[in-house]
Amino acid sequence: MCWPSRLARRWTEVVTRSLGNATDTNTKIEWRMLQENAQGSNNVAHRLPSLIDEYHSENKTLDVIILNNGLSDNMEKPWLEAIVRVLLEQFPQKISLIDGIPDNVGSLDEYQQNIQPERVRKTIMTQEHYNLTRVDFARMSQFLSYSEEERYASLRRQYPGSSLLWPQLGQMEFDNGTILTEEIAGPRPNGLEIYWARYKPQVAKTKSAYYPTNHPPWTTHQYVADTVLFTLIRVLRTGMGCADSINAHEVVTHPSLPEATAADKAEVDRCFVCLEPRERLDARTLESIVNGTGNDDLSVRESPVVVTCGDWSWVLTKENDRDGKVTKLEVSLDSD
Image (cartoon, rainbow, N blue to C red):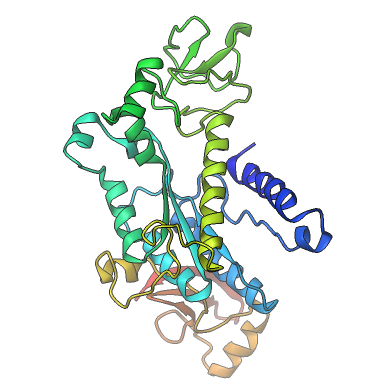
């Protein structure tokens, strides 16, 4: 079970325990999984128009949006910032996660020099610029792996060479500790149990999946779910005025939408999110459009039917033969 499902289940447990079994209490909690597996911010951007239209048409809102795009976002383009800006205009609170994969954790030398991996640096730059509540599993994994504080050092002495939060070795191992030399998608090659290498507690693989650090065991998913739940409760306490003991820097009350961007504005503008097209084209109206132009030789150069959004245009090209029959009808995407 992935961490969002575990989070929803844990939330129900906490609400039931705290507020009782009142039907109206439980029915008011609605969870929506809006992001498919391994989708990055650019994929999310294309889903935002339908999401926003759905909720606004029903006069509903989303109380909290949890962004978890770190596995797929290489941060070469500021798509994360682009969707954050749109979401801040439409919905209130945001929580942004940083996954604890090895590429985000970095090396001991980087930790000692306080150097963040580039993708993490850009993610945090966006989170801080827009005052987002952050849950940073990469930072947690760094402390467990490298910190000299006794509480972390003692854990490393107790479990030498082991990952305790998020697997940091992209391999599997047999029960006797032998590392698999090839990545195995299935759970049991030759009928033997295999486990996430150098990870504690030892967890056997039960489903087929490659990339062990991108697909951590259920214990990691539960850690993520519990940490996000803890953060949600702190956000709620802050919003309800019940958080006198909470440091204001730990939980953000009101995310901000400054005019300035964190990344170069021109780069952010290129990552546009089309919320409303300038024109709408229904294929069933094409004949009336052609007749209305009075141009039998309608072509993309002379009088195209164009649906435009941002800096891009959907261009409909129609060509006729001498008898007026359509010989070519195609739609293309072109930049202005």
